[in-house]
Amino acid sequence: MRRDMLEIDAGWQNSTWIHALDLHDVEAMRLMLSGGSVIDWQRLALVDFEHVDAYLSLHCLDMGNPAHADRLRYVFNEAVSYLEEHLKLHFPSELRNPDDVREVFVWASQFGGFRRTQILSCVVLKLMHVIQHLAAADLRHRTPISEAEVLALAHRRIINSAHAMQEDGVPVLSFTGNRKSRSSVITKLLAKKENVAATVFDKLRYRCIVERPEHCADALAWMGRNMFPFNYVIPGQSHNNLLDPATLLEELTDAEREHAQDLREEPELAEATKNEFSGASYRMINFIVDYPVPLPETRHSFDIEVGHVVFVNVEFQVIDEETARNNERGENAHHLYKARQQQVVAQRLKRGGRLR
Image 1 (cartoon, rainbow, N blue to C red):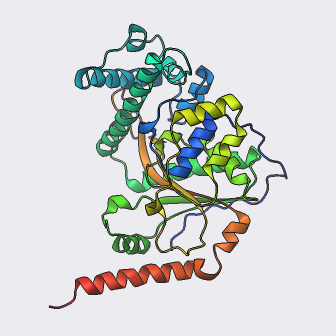
Image 2 (tube, rainbow, N blue to C red):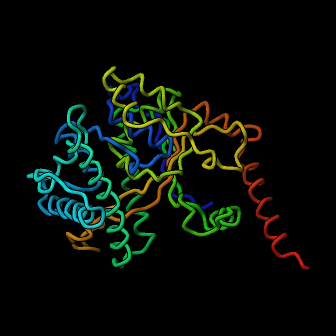
């Protein structure tokens, strides 16, 4: 397999990332673990502009940059116009034309009291999420840049983030990345029932190995705050049999826990996301993200209508060291995984070509 890999040594200096989880962290992590969709959410948990700015920076938006602020306002106006025209929704004046679009994120995070503004703010943000996806796809098609170059840009950003995670004290033993070889992609396509290229999400994939099982939550929380925006976790593509999402609620205050449970019922894990070729005892946290990649100015001049960001599908795996070792033993061994996959491929090809 062709590998483009960087490995981080166990050099985190025996420190751990000390960060009290808040409601935003927990809800983002539950989304990664359960493979839900933000379109089903009823509330955010961004308490002030500083929190919103940090979140928007993961979208590659710098609110100190007037062009980026104008882009955010443009997407907001597009969302409101759609909702007014097609769903016939009516917005209060402060929400229809807020002094600062960041207020919408704070309003969407409110609890208690009269909730009309909070609910409508969430509706607007969901439309902004969809519109940004469409704009990024449009930008990708109109920009003369190769897939290899976009993947390389994404890889550099992710590896830089991995170094920062280690420097922040998250007990990461290794962070390795690679891109699937052409032969592996062909085998995977033949093994899948829905054998089209769009279903091969993991063009880039990274494995983060932490010291102990309890550190998986630390890694996920850091990634959700610093590596990618949680709303771009691809629904229905998560697999987790390593960390119970319900245990994350124990880290919250009583008030936060009540709000978390009020947010929505815990979604059931989709069994379909489990890899059918893995061993029965194989354990892993696995999810796929539409990872935002800002295009360099040499490739694209900032455009208020489409912005400057395209997306790359990236698979992330998070696991502790002992579980990683166990996953290479017995029926979980990688060579047995590949043998089971190749056997299915051979059977499909032979049956499909059988003479009548």
